[in-house]
Image 1: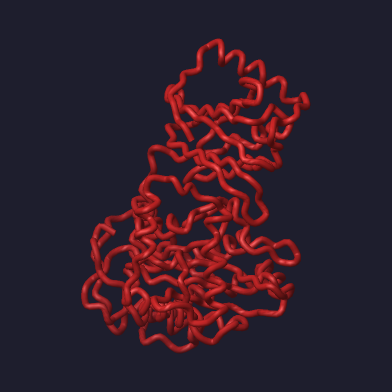
Image 2: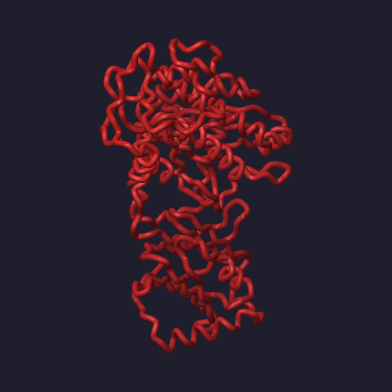
Length: 457
C-alpha cells in the first residue's frame, strides 16, 4: 500500500468533523460491503480489523504532531457499520484515544485515528481464510517499547526491598527446589527445616529468600529463573471451538494465568506471558519474546480438537528434527502452525525473512532438553487426568523452534470432546492442571539445574 505524507488542512479537518454527523444515515457500499469491525487493544499493540465481502484498498499517511493515522479506504461509502468501529475504541485503550470517520470523496471513506503516543503503524490486507472473508488490518505499535526483561528484574527487586545478597551455596540441608519436589511427591525432604507449604497455596517468598538451585549446581546462580508461558491463539484467532461454544484462546489464557501465579510464588522464579489478554501474537513473535527475556523454559498451552468428539486426554509435544513421531502429531502441528493464517500477519513486514530464518534454527541439545521437560510434565499431568499418549510426541511446531530454550507444547485436553470441554471450563480442573504443570517445571529443574549467567539477573 502506498504511503505518503499528506497534511490535513484546517478546512479539511472541519469538513471531516461535520461529516461524522452523517454516521446515522444509511449508505450503500461501492463494490464492497462491510461485514464486521473489530478492535483488539493490548499494551503490545492495538489491532483494528475491517472485514468485507470483497477486497478493499487503503492509502495511509501518518501525522506526528499530534500523532494520528489517517487512512483513505477506497471502494466503500460511509455506512452505519463503521459507527461500531468508533464506539469500540474504549478510553482505556493504551494506544488509541479515538477515531473519526467521514466520507472524504465518492467511494472513499477517511478514518483518522488519534494516538496516545508516537506509533509505528502497519496497514495490510488479508485474503479469506477459515471463517473470515477479506480483512483490512491496522496494527498500531508503540514507537517506544519497554524492555520486558527490565520489567521482570524490577518486579523481583520490588519483592526484595533490601539489597540482594549473593545466594548461599546450596547444601544437603538447604535445597529449596529439592524440598519442593520432595513435598510434592509425598516424601520427607532431606532437611531439618519444616516442610514447605503446598504449592497451590504457597505464600509470596520473603525478601531474603535464597535462589532455588539444586545442590548439584556448583556455581552460584543468583538470578531470575524465567519461564515463558505461551497461551495459544488469541485475538482474531479463536483456536478450536468446543461443541458448547468454548473458545480455546479463552481457556488456555485462564490456565496460563493460574500457572503464572504459581511460578511467581517460587523464590527467584518469574513467569513471562507472551500474551496476557485477548490479542493475537504471531508464532515467530512468541519465540522472539521468549528469547528477549532470556527464558529458561518455554511452555505453549493449547486445547486440542479433532474431527470427531471421541478423542480425549492431554498430550505433550516437543520439536522434531526428522519429522513427526506420528500422523496425529503431524496433523496437530500443521493445525497449530496455521494460526498465523487465521490470526493474520503482515507478510510484507521488513523483518519477515529474518524471522523465517530464526524459525528454521534448532539444535539437538534444545530438543534433548525439551524431551526431558516434556517427560517431567507428562508424568505430572497424568496424575490429574487421562493422557492421550503415554509418551512425549514430536513434530515440527513453529512455536517450539527457539534454538536455545527447552520448549514444549501442552495440549491440555480435547476441547472437541464435550466431557473434556466441560472440564476445561471448570475451576477445579484448571487448578489441578496448573498445579501439575508447576510440579513438572520443578521436577525438570531438580534434575536439570539452571545454569549460571549474568548476575544482574
